[in-house]
Image 1: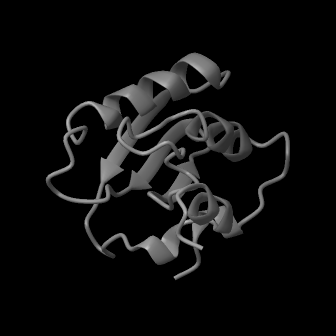
Image 2: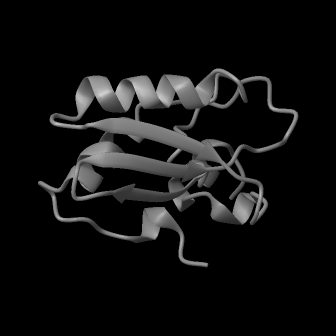
Length: 112
């Protein structure tokens, strides 16, 4: 599986702007943004500017499972111009592992 943080988007693209917003979102228990944690699996932007983010959480029992997705949707709508809608879908397949984290995130958390 290609990790989203290994992809590059054109700097002015809506996808790049969405990724910039995702890098401002944190799980309150982990001092690393959700993008660097590897929680974001995909960002899709339709021709009509509908944004669909596919993500996971570190655990199905994650205490922010009910609050984090709506927070992300709100931030995308508030900070990315011309977005029609923003939807965050939480999936559990593939399951998240620490291998999905960026090298920087692993360093930040003392895992390297």
